Length: 79
Image (tube, rainbow, N blue to C red; front, side, top):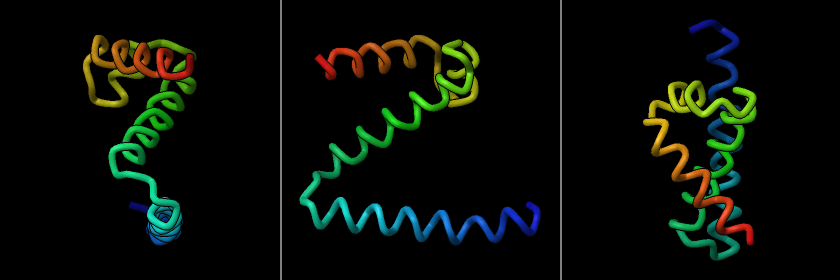
């Protein structure tokens, strides 16, 4: 890891800690927080892969069918 990577790690941890505290203070349940993080993470990886689920699934380390199921679940929740 480069020196830059080491400097970024504490910043990320501090941001994650702040987000966790905010969620707890607002009474957000663990399952809701986890689901929202997963959705945000997956949607961003898919966006960065121009909607290509095969490449996104590979980058996420999950099967393409699993990714398609999760994406379908997110679409149903919006309606």
